[in-house]
Length: 308
Picture 1 (cartoon, rainbow, N blue to C red):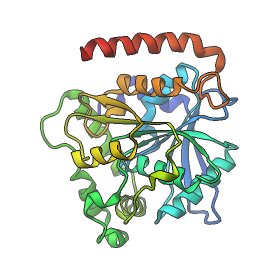
Picture 2: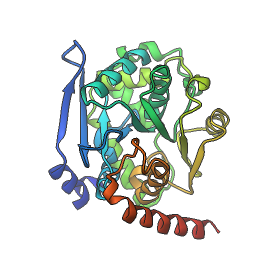
Picture 3: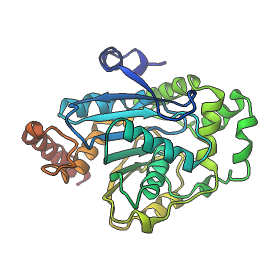
């Protein structure tokens, strides 16, 4: 139980990468928590947005691996926002505070939906250079909760946790997936009532992505073939919405592949970011490119052989 939390990797991450807290709204209670790692001279980093149950550290395996290859990576945790417009406005202010004009976004589940909404919100003055959408969706109506979305704020914490845990895998899973679920349950326990209620509200509030506003953005859709909280219909809808998107399929990984299949996820992230090398939107230190590209080619080769 709780293998990840006591692992050397996680402890190394917590002891070497500081957690920053930033307020960008007039309301002092709205605090963004984030890990910012890798070379500061990179002006178009990759930013990770967590799912409903996640905190910024659920992406620690991506931070450790990608910064080792010379990428600048930011993983964050949202303050309490009750609607998508308010979130987008707050996120824009955060990017202004960090002096980042454009960014690449990796969003998991709710994080992926918010990444798309932010790209849509800023489409007239683009702030999103590319998107990686992991187990994500484009329309909140798939959860059939739009009618309860406005009452989450009234519910006690234990009830909200029960709703979230209902989407976690309950069947037999391999040890790495079991560890990932344990870790996410632990992260869920660390969230307060208003944090959880606001995230569930954002997750279920009636809203959908308008693809014509973001169709010029390079997209990679990452999903798993085994059981996850996302229905087949929701996945198909994403493929239809982004017909030109690259697809990164993982045979297994459940709801949290970035924790239990991190090597594959990291490789797909590198493959996605490869297209921006040598441009001003590269998320990697130029001096690290040749060694990193070699490693990605080796990884792509082994994935291709496995699939054959």
